Length: 131
Image (cartoon, rainbow, N blue to C red; front, side, top):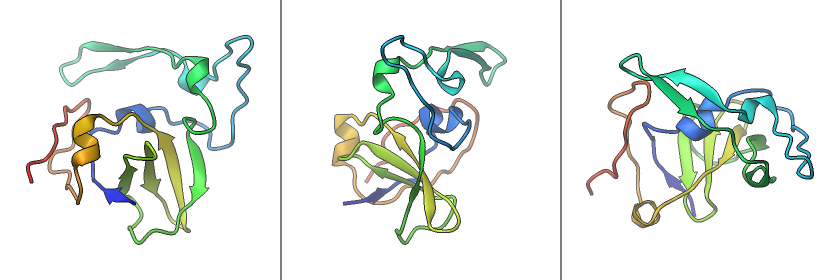
């Protein structure tokens, strides 16, 4: 079952932008591709925000960012979250989407319906919309 939310925060997935081709990960040595390495970003007030590296153990096929076929009814640019499969889809043109593995808390599993992004800003906070 798909739940469509337009989220203000998709920072984990969308901030890790990089090549769309599959990236080799050597789990034995812990080598993590550069798009998943630690980095520093600038917060809304100019402060530095440290983003830790993703552990190699988490970068399995389900969690790695991947371009996948998508045949849902949503328009390009829509963010679709499937909380039970723990994946997020950023719908693209040509029947494709960028898929990201995500974590979903209890409140997210209980939410159904649509949400609209009413404020877009860098490093926003997000709370469950009122129903």
